[in-house]
Image 1 (cartoon, one colour):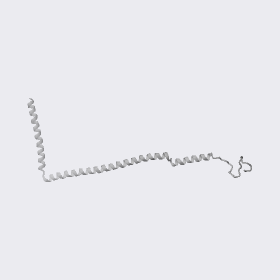
Image 2 (cartoon, helix red, strand yellow; image 1 turned 180 degrees about the horizontal axis):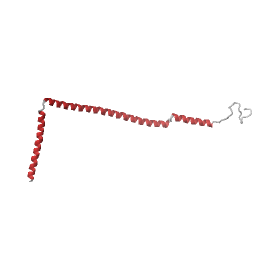
Image 3 (cartoon, one colour; image 1 turned 60 degrees about the horizontal axis):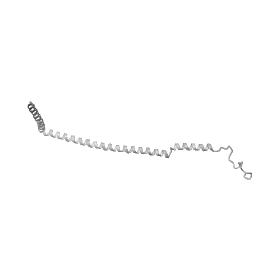
Image 4 (tube, one colour; image 1 turned 30 degrees about the horizontal axis):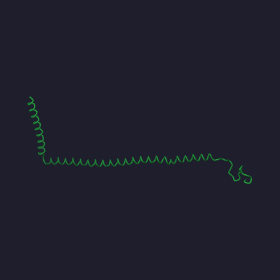
Length: 137
């Protein structure tokens, strides 16, 4: 019984191989029986497809190149901005804001003006000093 099953399987395998071979021959014969005009049209279509594919590849390469340039410019810009922020924070520590400096100067001027002696007497050369002697007056 095992031999019968083995024989049937081998016959089915041979039949399948024959069918595949027949399909290949039919396809090949079908192409050979095409008119020269149709063969030329098929070749033209193949060439057109290849040229489109190469055109797309060139466009893709150009786009990729531009994208890489844009990334590089963006990275350089980001680095410059970071560097600018770092240097501006250092500058602020050593060199205050001009408005802030003006306010601080005004505060200092106010303090010196308020601490200055305020005599209501005009400064005069004839003002007498209590410590002066009669001859010095």
